[in-house]
Image (cartoon, rainbow, N blue to C red; front, side, top):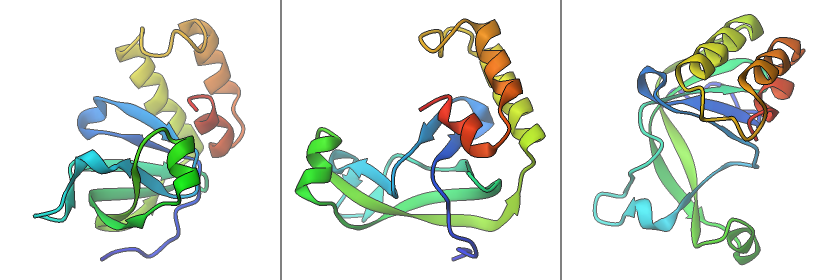
Length: 143
């Protein structure tokens, strides 16, 4: 619908009201086939999310649609029967600055202090975030 720019992976995405934050470092969106409804032809995950790619483009994703299956090898790597997905955008792509993304990520860390403790202490994580020089570098902290 509004696909005016190509999404450059890795990406980081936020669910509504920044309730969850995830990063994805793959060639395209993939999802577990169990979340795909064959009757409605809709995928139940990745709804109403904001995605920021490695170029700082901000995509507003309304929902996902199934494009195809993925190769057996890719399914084995991802540990399950997966399908390839394409985003259906809610509105045109905009941009985000690295500073704004850092602020958003730091806010998320503050509100969810135990979520990424396996990566580093919260202070260490904040240091890594503030030292990141590119979108890619920042996103890959959460890989």
